[in-house]
Image (tube, rainbow, N blue to C red; front, side, top):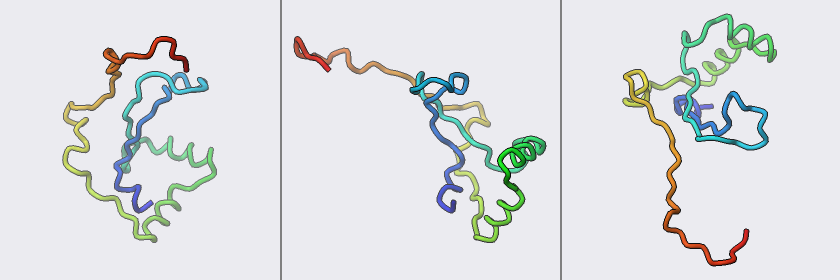
Length: 106
């Protein structure tokens, strides 16, 4: 957790949230982020999640504090989305010039 706390909650998802029942990932990967501090999500959602999974956010926070795990400040530019800039992925065909042997099979 001491390593993960500094990653600022970003990950790449290749499964679309609205097509979670597909057996393989489809579509362009998306850079997404997780909640990184109090106040970013309503307390009733946290309470419902805690009840659903049988956990206590209060106890988890206390355990992290006791272990000396603290949240670092965000690196400048890591939250560029706040200022209207966001990164996205795209598919670029770089195989236009690729020549495959006649009769090649997979």
